[in-house]
Length: 171
Image 1 (cartoon, one colour):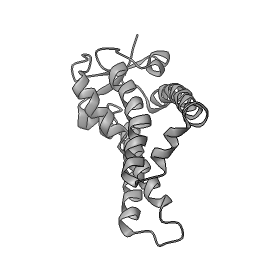
Image 2 (image 1 turned 120 degrees about the vertical axis):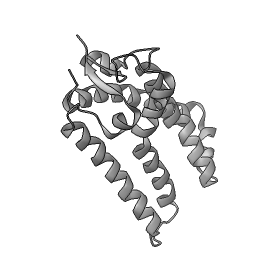
Image 3 (image 1 turned 135 degrees about the horizontal axis):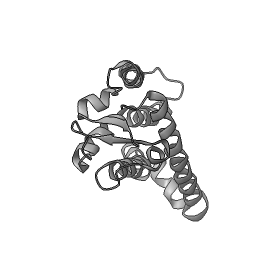
Image 4 (image 1 turned 90 degrees about the horizontal axis):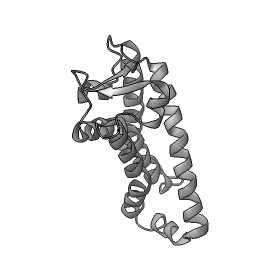
C-alpha cells in the first residue's frame, strides 16, 4: 500500500528534528568553537553560497541518499513512521537513483538558499525580475510536490514520478 501525504509528512518532521539538531551543532561550532567559519559567509557571494551548500545542503542530502537507498533502506523518520522508498518493482533503490530523487526533492530548498543569498545584497534596491521568477519557481515546485503526492493514484510526489520511486507502507 502506498504511503499517504500525512505519513510522509510525519516521517519528514521526525527527520527534520535530526536536521535541526545538526544545524544547532553547526551553529555552536561556527559561533563558539570555530568562529572563523563565519568569514566564508561575509566575502564573495559565490563562496558564501558554496560554503552553505557544503555545510548544510550536502550533509542533509547525503543523509537521505544513504539512509533511503539500498544501503540504509529507511531514514530514521521513515522507520518510525513505517514507510520506505522503493523502486517500481518494490526493490530497494540504488544510490544513484536516490541521489537523483533527493536532488529533485531538495531543489526548492537549494533555490531558496540561492535566492536568500542574493536578496541579502540588494538591501533597498529593486528586486530583479529573474529573482521574482526564481521565487515563483520555488513555490510552484513546492505546491506541485505536495499536490501530486496527495492526488496521484499511487501517492507519488512529482520527484517520485520523475525518479520512478514510490513510498510504501512497511509491515
